[in-house]
Amino acid sequence: MVASKIPVLKLNNGKEMPILGLGTWKSKPGEVEHAVRDAIDLGYRHIDGAIAYKNEEEVAEGIKAKIQDGTVKREDLFLTTKCWNTYHRKEMVVKALRDSLKRWGIDYIDLYLIHWPMGFKEGDEYFPKDENGKFLYSDFDYLETWEGMEECVDLGLAKSIGLSNFNSQQVDRVLAKARIKPVVNQVECTPWLPQNKLLAFCKERGIQMVAYSPLGSPDRPWAKPEDPTLINDPKVKEIASKYGKSPAQVLIRFQVCSCLWLQFVIVQRGIATIPKSVTREYIQENMEVFDFELSADDMTILDGFDQGGKGRICHVSWYSDHPYFPFHIEF
Ligand SMILES: NC(=O)C1=CN([C@@H]2O[C@H](COP(=O)(O)OP(=O)(O)OC[C@H]3O[C@@H](n4cnc5c(N)ncnc54)[C@H](OP(=O)(O)O)[C@@H]3O)[C@@H](O)[C@H]2O)C=CC1
Ligand SMILES: CC(=O)C(C)=O
Image 1 (cartoon, protein in one colour):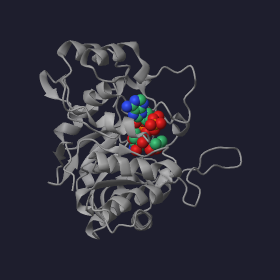
Image 2: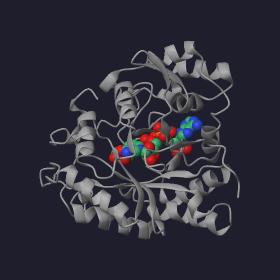
Image 3: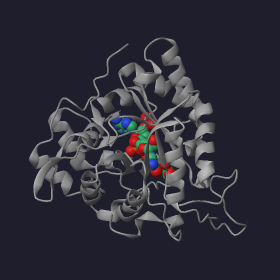
Image 4: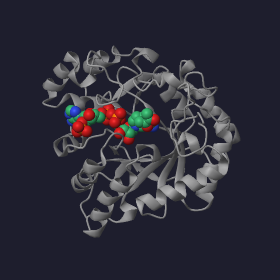
């Protein structure tokens, strides 16, 4: 087995999670199997998937190939999937994971997340709408969904459970009720939206933050040609060239290992992150971030990128009338 050079983080339940993983949203079925194989060959052990990405079978093909050829064993891998918004009823949470595990061809997932706090109308349609194009919601409270998540652990279907896209008040509501504590909150995080307050809040509660869209999600479906792109930002490019690194490597390093002032002390961000790529060269480049250090001056420049909520790319404002929409408050 090839040993991985990617550091691991200890979660609040004692389990370990590699700080860097491969994202798979928008990775097309024809491409993602190869991407997963390449990633595992290169040393990735953490793969971030979701039921809603509709490519779990193909992700699983890549994993199976690497287990079959002896590169890794199942237990070397840290696999994540996410309970979609149409499965928020307690019983559906367990059923959705069982169905997902069948698609992955495995008997447990390492990390199961509630994808969003908002529940959608149950049914086969992942984005249900009425005849006027209005999104159809369910009124299941995510606290009920959390009970289903806990049952997944009880049943041995999930080793760890966590949240995604939860704001601080929603995290605290779950914590007040939880029998099993969430290990992570997976949220968008970039220099444009560095999430410093949510990071401090999660650190205080022993919840690991995971940064999604760390490169600014240039291939997001709603990107407009005139939108600025983080990896093409001249300041990011200038910093990268100083270190002989790429803009993507600077943005990833910013998450996993850079310092910031939090409540008057300097701390390591130490945020796990899951850049997506289907390009072998990028997949390799994105893991070569543990051999350089961003200087305090360069961190000051990157700190200047903070736009608060305006910097959010995955704003999903089309659901902003949902009672559990998470982005109406500062963090
Ligand atoms: N919990 C949630 O609600 C969400 C979770 N996520 C998770 O986070 C992952 C990452 O976020 P995502 O939004 O996909 O976007 P990213 O910020 O990871 O950007 C992905 C894009 O960047 C390109 N890219 C990757 N590496 C490089 C590089 N070294 N140089 C130049 N371009 C590069 C990719 O190209 P290419 O693929 O063509 O190689 C792709 O177009 C998702 O895939 C998903 O797993 C994302 C959004 C929401
Ligand atoms: C990519 C993703 O996970 C979304 C938009 O929910």
